[in-house]
Length: 462
Image (cartoon, rainbow, N blue to C red; front, side, top):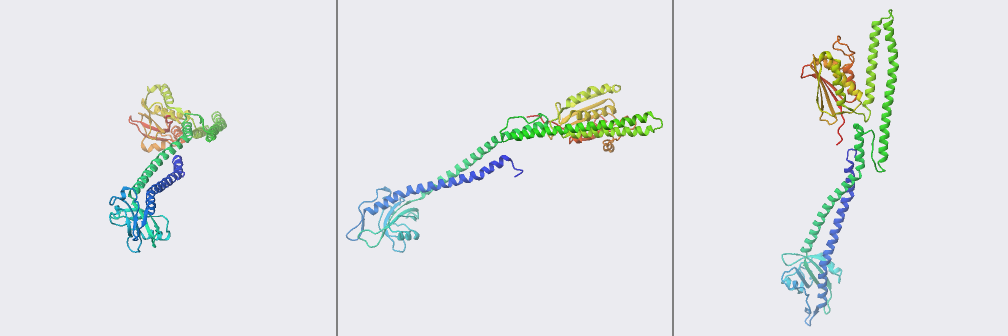
């Protein structure tokens, strides 16, 4: 149940009672129609039996004769499917016929033993039973009554029968129509229930879209008018978002306090190492610089982790890159630096602007430091629909493949002659990891190093 769609679950639960109810209704309607057809079918037969009993007489010779025959012309036409007879059960074989309709054409009808038993047990009552007719054992439905006529000692059976196939066909056709209507009604009902559920759950779907907007950074909180059943959920979500922002803000405050608390004693150590001749200043100075670098590194990492979990923070990629494209050539004027900007425009980073500036700034500054004269910055969308890639290439000396992993380690410096703390790529890797991204190093097509950043992006609101 946990993995089922809410819409499908509601429609399925409604179908569990609706479909059986429609099926039972179709069966009941078919039975009612069947009874109606057979009641209409039996009425003329009952009238014919009653008329025969009223018009039969016994003459002076003890023979039966009719003063008036039933008026239906089908009783006069041979093998027409309508028959009547007056006979007697002699215990073996068909009835012994005294008088019969011309339609029997000298033949008789075969009455089941159960019907004969009912006639004997319920003398004077109408008995309904299927019988076989004279036309190649045609299926008939008969009404019979056993009576004792004046002037006779033994009872006789007065019977009228008709071909029941037209009635059976009518009932079968009705059943097929009822089944077809049941299927149509079921499909229509399921469609109506699906639409009703979709309409009923539309505010919940809208709430999902609003939460997505907040997560992607398009909105600061969940806005909109919701039904009373969903409004408390929207309010709780807004409270949760506010609580998340407060936690992140408190984390930033604590990180800042930690930075001030640690930097002051480190600065004192550095000053003491420089001013006093009897202090091993070279060792103390080196260690305090390492401490300061480590503090900066961990503070950045803590800030990045806090910001990486925050909700609704975004930054335009173009603005950050364009600012660096304008600034770096002024810093490295001696190289006549050329920075080429390529790729997708209008991308939005799902994270803090200062983190994007630090990641892209470190990489572009590193490329400008090592390049001969040319740096290429490329942005592109990825097939995941929630990620983007920023690639920075230079035409400098680059790195060998065995140095790629070493370059990302904290404090690693592959060239001690070049100024720096060795934390640049490590900081980028830490920040990128905080946003669940990835840093990869490779060989540039223009000869130097190629660094690729995979970062989360804001999907356009469609």
